[in-house]
Every structure is written in C-alpha cells, then in structure tokens.
Length: 595
Image 1 (cartoon, rainbow, N blue to C red):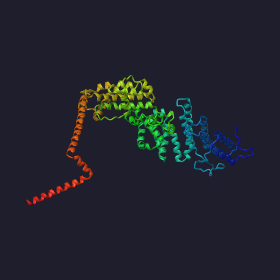
Image 2: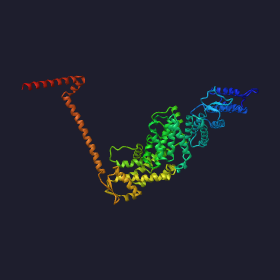
Image 3: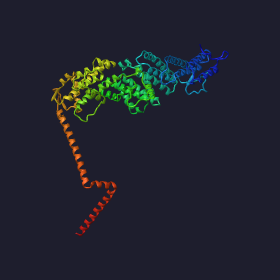
Image 4: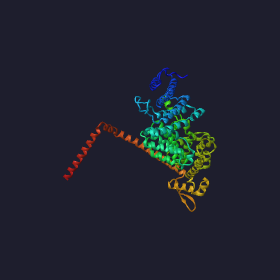
C-alpha cells in the first residue's frame, strides 16, 4: 500500500512537494529512521510530482535524494550493499541519466546553493552532482565483487553488471564533455580507463598496425589527462594504466619508453597506496611483456623487486599474508581488505614466479659458470640462489613435482651444458598446464624459451669446459646444441669481445682456438689456498707486533708517558724539548764564533 503523502483537500504544487521533501530528508541519519520507508516515501513523492506535471527539475531533485537514500541504506562503509539495493541503485542512476540527457537546459552543479535553486520555472537550477553519484556507484560495484566468493556463480552474475556500469560511464562522459569542467572530464575519463586497461583484446594483439578502438580511446583520454590534470594523481594513474595496456598487448617498446620518460620510479614512493599497487601491477605486466619478447634481462629487472621479498601477493593487492613479526590490528586489516582487487583483475602468481625464476636461471647459471672460482662473486638473484640452496639441502631429491622443482632440475642440467634435459624440465605437459598455456599464443613463447635455453647452455658449456679444449669446431657446437652455425659464431664473437672467453676464431677452418691463459680448476684452488695462507700469516704477524709493542711500553715506562700525555703533561714536555733544542743551537753558534 502506497503511503499517504498529502491530505485530501491539499493542493499539490511546488511549495507543498518541496516542504514534504524537506520533511522526509530531515529524518535522514536520525536514530530509529526506517531507511526502507524513506526510499518508499521519496519514490511516492516523485510519482505524485510527475502525476501533477510539476516539471522535470523537481523530479530530478527528488531523484538525487532517492539515490542518496539508497547509498545511506548500508551504514557501514566497509561492507557492500545488498543485491536488491544494488539493482535499485543501478536503475536509479540510469533513470537520473535519462532525465539529465532529456533536459540539457537544466543547470546542475555542486556549487549551486539551496537558496539559489530554481525548480519551478525555467531556467531551472538544481543542486547535485551526477559525477559523484556515478563514482560512488562504481566504488559500490567494486565492494560487491570483493565481498563475493571468487569461485562462485554469484561472482559471475555480479560481474555481468560491469557492462551496465561501463554503459553508464559512457553516457556520463557524453553528457560531461561539452559542459563539464576539465577536472570533472579528467575524473570521468580515469573511471573509464580503469575499466579498460586490464582487458585483453586479441584483435589488437594480432594486428598492432591496425587502428583499434580501445587503443584509440585510451590514447585520447590519457592525452587529455596529461595535458589538463592539475592534481598529478590522475596523471600518474592514467599513465600507469596506459603502460599496463600497452604491455598486455606486447607493445614492449612503447610501454618501456613511456615508463622511462615518466620517471615514475623516482617518485612513486610519495604516492598513495592504491597508486603504488597499480605501479607494482604495471611493473609486473611490463616484465611479462619483456619475457614474451625475449628480453630476459629486462624481464628479470622488472620482476626482481616484486619477487625478492616473497610478498608478491600482498604487493599486488591479491590477498593478505600472515605477518609473523607483528600482528595487524582489526582496523588495519579492514583497510587492507578494502584495497584488495576483484578476482577477475588478478595476475597469476605461479606464472609470475615461473617467469622470474626462468629469467634468473638464464642469467645466473652462465654467470656462475664464468665466475666459479671467484671468491668475490656477486649474486644477481637472491631468490634464485635461495631456491637452489633449499634443493641442495634435501637429502633425497626425487623427480620434480612443483614448478620450482622443475626450474631447479633444469638449472642443474644447464650447469653441465645439457640443453635437451634442461628444456624437457621447463617445457613438458605438467609445466604447460600450470604456466605456459596461460599465455596467449603459448607456442611462440615456448619456442622463444627453447632458443634461449640453447644459447645460454652453449655459453655455460664454453665457460665450464674451455680449459679442457685446445680448439672447438663451430660445426660440432652447432650440432650439439641444434642451433644455426651463424648464431654460434655470433655468441662466441660476443664472448671474445667482452673478454669472457680467452680465445680467437679461425675463420678458414671454422674453429675456436683456446688461448689457455685462464688457470685450470686445480690451479685456481691452489691460488685461493695461497691467498688464504698469506692473509693468515699477515694476521699472525700483526698480532705478534702488537704483543711485542705492549711489552716494550710496559718495560720502558711508555704507559706512564701515555698517561702523562692524556693528563696534559704532553704539551709541557714538548715545550721543554723545544727549549733544549734552542739552547743547543745557541751553544753551537757560540762555539763556532769562538773557533
């Protein structure tokens, strides 16, 4: 039954409706107010206003209050609204946009005071902000996704509403661009960018030269924000979103250049936490893009900060880790849970770790082989060394099961130059299902990984066994590692130029002639032993000198001299010595004159 708003004889005009509206609003937020009833009263008031043809402005004013009442229904900001309320909210915002689009002559704004509102006669002026309402709706949508179980059908059903949310944002953009301020346009553009940047478009990936709508829209909106934004936060976020979007579609050089030119890595620590999370996500996506393109060192450098601490899940806002050192307060936990990303935006952490460890293996294993006897060898990847040490501590090593064990087994095979075994550990049915098939066009990624394993295994083989050979045939090496002879020539030439391999290429016979200037393993161990023995002798001699010096001081009263020095007698003795030397000089000159 509809609630009774006015008495039978009351004339329903603008004054009566506004009076009743203020009466309903005055109860907002008070103890004991039924929020459901408030929404029902406002809807009934709007229908009465429409029935009496009181104009679009008063209906719009009531609509603003209806949506505010829906937002107020849930008093706790940390929890999401109920699904029936969410549906009402979506319908209300769509209806408000219909009104706004149908009546472009109505002036709407936050800066309009209640006293200067005009809802009776044109030109209409209504206090309110459509952008703020849409932004709040977007935040509520994120909260609803956070509250759902990621693996339930409820999450999928709720995610279907994203299409409608994006349509509302498009309509708002169409409305604001001709009449909004630059700040408002930047805000609505950023909302649209944040719904676009993580979505993969196979068409854009397959045809990078063709003009794609999503890329075009993204570029136009980002350029506008770069030029017009005054807050710096919106510019930073839009730039990170654009880099992420470029990297997701394998546009490595554009994404890398934009990141380097922005200098965000120097100032990101001063940004707010959600922007830092977005930066972490962008760096991870940039690293994955570099890996897919075969730039292994760039991939390792991009991923090392995220992977080195073992807190990738937390840094990417994909879940909370148990903290052993100090417990989180309930308030801190609520804040951190509010920052978590919805499940459909997550980056696969096992894929990320596998890419990082494979990159580290391809860099670290040849480096370890080249500097095997170097006592001052630095670590390129601490995480990789930790994984290797953990495997070495195991008393019994069975066949690899997990992704880490596969990478460790592959590293051990690469150390001996056995590239086929290494490749079989990295690319097999189990690893394909866990990691490689998650890539778009996984066959090209697997081919790239195989070629890199062949090249780095060749380098490792040369570092490890160069002292054994007098000369090596390029043809034999090409057959062993199943790569083109030109590639073998190129790799060995680079190693000779960089002074990593003491050898020379004999072009007529296509052989590598070893100079054998580097010490063998036995010679290196002997050199290390002699260095350690000499340092031990030096230390012993120093200790003996110190002991002898102390005995001498005690015998000669040197200790007393040092005490006198500290007590101020040192200066007096110094003056006395100076006076004695002066007297000696005078006596000498007198004797000289007498002579």
